[in-house]
Image (cartoon, rainbow, N blue to C red; front, top):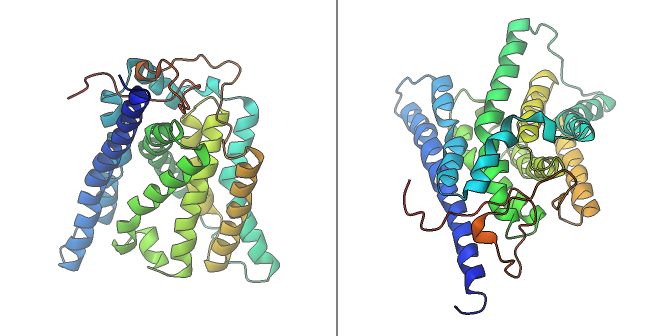
Length: 308
């Protein structure tokens, strides 16, 4: 075998895994969401909530596609990363609360300081709050196993974690695009190419960095990203927002993401940690030069995985 040949093969399989994840994720979601957009353009009455609901599981299905072709050591620990809160140190739950709530709160308080705070809706019913919480948790559970699970796992095993998080954030941003054209959605109300459109999309990339940092710092927990994602959505539902609050919130996220990248030197807390049992994927054994697989959650395609 040529020197570096094994490493090149592993690298190509990693990128193939990412491509497979993206193809399944976008194909599933965009079939429903762009389908809903086209139906609306043709004046076909389709329930918007149903369209969003049917398209939402795309990232979860993409994750399952990759898991079916991944090393057993990676698959065996994946479910625990989603449901087990014990792997998360207490301090990281506080960090999660800060990431989820503070940007929206800073946005509102900053707007209030100018005397232009949006009016608060004090008539929120218990049912409305329960729906917001349930919807936010559901969104987290169907999205995060894909984006911060296999998506970022694959990328940060090959590139700098901060770079991987930005790439995942860009894909996450693109994935949401049809919603801006689907009448009746939150994104549609923001408008296309407006200030709020750009603020929303930039926030996704910045949140991708922060969620990846939370995952890495909590020994690869995906649950922490689910909670952060849900908390971000709940805060956005409860704390009033407008164009100015969005601008201030995005500025706060820029500062937070830049601080995390700077303080961790772009590694986003990725590295061997106390209490983490190393379970290297078989294809990563041998220590090929340049591999970043020293942590237990770097996936690898199982040998000769030619089908389900």
